[in-house]
Amino acid sequence: MCGIVGYFGPQAPKNILLSGLKKLEYRGYDSAGVAIHNAGEFKVYRAAGKLAELEEKVSKVDFDGRIGIGHTRWATHGLPTERNAHPHKVNGVSLVQNGIIENYAELKKELIANGAQFTSETDTEVVTHLIAQALADSADLMAAIQKVIPKLRGAYAILVVSENEPDTILAFKAGPPLILGQGDGEVFLASDVQAFVEQTNRVVYLDDFEIVKVKGPTFTFYDQFGVEISKPVEVVDISVATSDKKGFKHYMLKEMFEQPRAVANALNPYIDVETKSIDVSRLGLDGAATEIEALKALQGAERIYIVACGTSYYAGLYAKYLIEQLVRIPVDVDVASEFRYRDPVLDKKSFALFISQSGETADTLAALRLAKDNGLTTMSLCNTKRSTIDRESNLHLYMNSGIEVGVASTKAFLSTLAVLNTLSIYLAESRNQINADERAQLVEALLSLPSLMEGVLSYDSFFNQAAETLKNYKGFLYLGRGHNFPIAMEGALKMKELAYLHAEGYPAGEMKHGPLALVDSQMVAVVICPKDKYYDKTISNLEEAKARGGVIFSIGTGQDEELEAMSEHYLSIPESHWMLSGLLSVIPVQLLAYHVADRLGHDVDQPRNLAKSVTVE
Ligand code: F6R
Image (cartoon, rainbow, N blue to C red; front, side, top):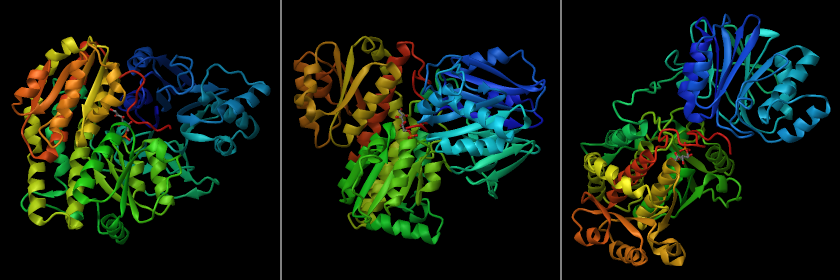
């Protein structure tokens, strides 16, 4: 992961780099550093810990140069210490990397054999040495980089500066994103447009193996053979991430409370409120012939693959239940890191959907490319427009949930579920599984979602109080059936990543096949038990946990005296259409994890060891 930034221009590079890094902190926040030109050399400042540590360190330093690079780290090789923080500097060459050099160990061995001395445990320092060594031969940074790139195996985005060419930044990538921003007499480079979108919306997305040379305020692109290429400057319509918590204690809490609006925004582009229909022309199509073909492939698909990671994977699992029930076509759901390596048997008549909030997740991107190589038509469902996964897929859906600052996904997940509901209804109608009246009823149910969600959010204080006792338990089992099983998985993930407590999600019917052995008076069973076709069966599973001393936290529908009597804590979600119970159960499991984590004193917005955009595999 990691975030990288670069700048040349009339503004103070220190301020531009630090403000860019702040926007990129979601990509990693265990250490940070900058290299800024000053008095004839690139001065490197680095600090372990959050960006604030680096800000403090450079607060009183003045730089006379107009150029610099910066980095915020999510450690891959070596502990998150100051000496492992980027930039790394060797013989006047300073470098920042987002990614992993897979063959760094063998390269390092050769370098050491040739006398190189290392000061860190990182793979990044290896690249810095290689470039410094190549520069000793040619004295031209571009030539040195071209010599080094063929030696690197892995996925990386790199910015490099050299004291021999003090007005130049070289940037190149293979895998993680890298974007150039064109200002007036200034140039920005970053892992994400957010780092500089306040300054300019004129951007160029680098493709893999391209190199860009920023020399003063000008820039030139080269292909992997060093041949100059021209790339269009695009004007992007991307809103600036707000740093305002709007009075909430954490971004995550604010984002959970934004969910009714986020879901309404997610549904809005696809649904015609008047006719309760789903507008095909709004499924990310702009009428291009290839996209019309892609849409036909979707409508005619004999099987759908859904591929994603983490929370987005659980959204995919949820879609499997819905699509199979409504559309009656088989759906396979895969974790991207498995899909890409398990040599899947892919039939060209199938269709593949890739879900990614960031649109940059390395495994999901590799899975998308694999599907395309196998001749499948692809569709992405992303939050970040113009992200790599969005750009590389044939059809495009969007979560439309706005910027999500909290590292643990909340509103993007619910928006994803809402869009997946829309897609399922659309497919069901276009494949004659439902008629226009049924479609209108389903759409109407979906449209009622935001106001029902408001009702669930009003129970926030209930979770806050429950968390006071729940924070003391040794673990949590989340149980659900049908489309509430993926929600149970998501609830367990939220508890793990925020509260650092052991939590597992299971189909409730699986309890007696093993997990029941975990249940004792120190274990909480969080049971999602709406009044649906599974109700009686889930109640039986709950009885089994209760009989073994488990503490029951249940989420049921409306007034459910039976469930309430069996539970230490009972939370009611509103009576609703069957399709909505999964979506309405999401907020309780989010709020539960949030309040337990907060009461345990954890950094809810930036959980330890995590980053929001996972651009390494
Ligand atoms: C958990 C979480 C992660 C992401 C996963 C995939 O709260 O946010 O599990 O869902 O890393 O990320 P995207 O959706 O950006 O591909």
